[in-house]
Image (cartoon, rainbow, N blue to C red; front, side, top):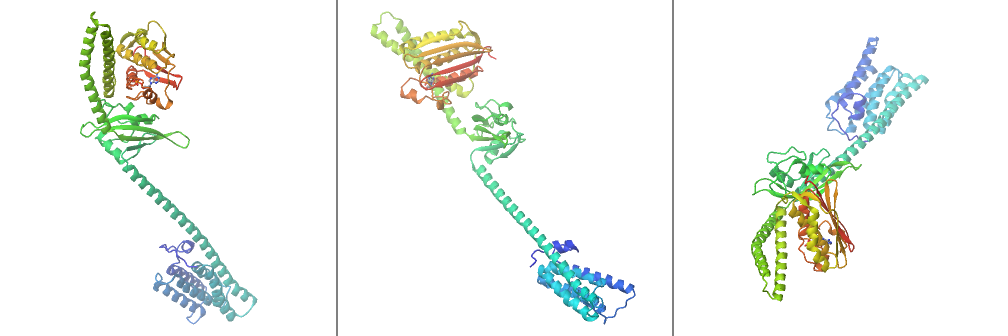
Length: 551
Ligand code: ADP
């Protein structure tokens, strides 16, 4: 067995023999020390030694071996060559115990026996046994004679030495097997670490290469990971630095680009409350040259037990889109504004003409078409203006005491002819008077939009029911129809500007898709909510709830 592992350890003893390479000078030094002690004891006991005596020769052999141990360049010689020294040591023991193989000097054979076992493994044990017989047993038998006690001593000493050598060889095998196992584990561990490290670098590279800002928050709201794109956004939002915690205020504005976002509305704060959302728009930075509009999405991260473990947020740069939207809204606003003046004049002169008594009957009919279309155009222009305003910020509401029952009554009266023309029953149930704090004109728009939609999207012989009731400090307006209904997949887009259902388009039902987005923004500006419940082919129910007292 070759010993592969080398070590700088120079400890002497079992540790040295089992865990480190045999160090010839250290082991030989130790053997020489044992021999010196043995000789000294025997001298003290009155024995005398000459260089010709066997014990004297033993000392010479030991010195020779020690000299070789000290002088030969063992590091450059093959490991097994170190076996020469324990063989010389066994020869020294043989000389020392030649006259009495059972004497105490025989004990010294244990050290070279260990040494050979450690150096050559099980072969070392065999070498020890043979060397013991040849160098210790046979010389003593030939010196002292073949008596039974001599025979026992001469064979026992090599046998014990061989056994000791075998024991250390197998111990060392075990130690080596354990060492190899440990090395295998540590190799596996380090290659697993390498794989993890590689994957980390790959995912870092991917995260850094995407054009979306990404943030990972831990369960305490600390920023756990931020990609390169988001660091750019953070430099705009927090020129003074960021403390790495969710909800920190900075140069972060709402969708209008002017209102500073309070902590409670910061996307990271909302995400830490467990909210999940998409397309929440914010602006970061306060310099018009560099600021960016971001559309933020958030998702909750959960652990194995399903408990909240943090949140992941994605920030999409939508500056160009927002700028284009603003250009479009500015355009719509200015065109609508420009259209209003000539329209007012058309309406005014058409009304004046209509007041005349000398108009022939067909002129009155034609004029009423002009007036009806001018009114329609007027409503469209108002809706366009309104929707452009919504994009620029929340609608301003001017609350006064208003009778909502009367507003509903007016709407029903105005829309009754259209309902009758479509053979639709228009039914109201609710109080005769219901005074609440609302913006009268805006609420009129809400009622008109919902009721006119209900009539528009209900086929003949249908029914439209308008209910008004107070529920706690909320007033509830319900407009239910038996019309075409709205597909579940379309309900999210229902309140988006310019969105119309396929059905509405196919059936050429008049409209531009602004009414519901305006309605929603008016309701929300009143601190209320609008909900829809619908079944295709059976009808829709729109439910509006707003606070009675405006609070
Ligand atoms: P418009 O009616 O001018 O198209 P709205 O914003 O009022 O615009 O409505 C948007 C779309 O929602 C409509 O085009 C229609 O497809 C659908 N919708 C609105 N109200 C109803 C309703 N009561 N029943 C069925 N569909 C409706």
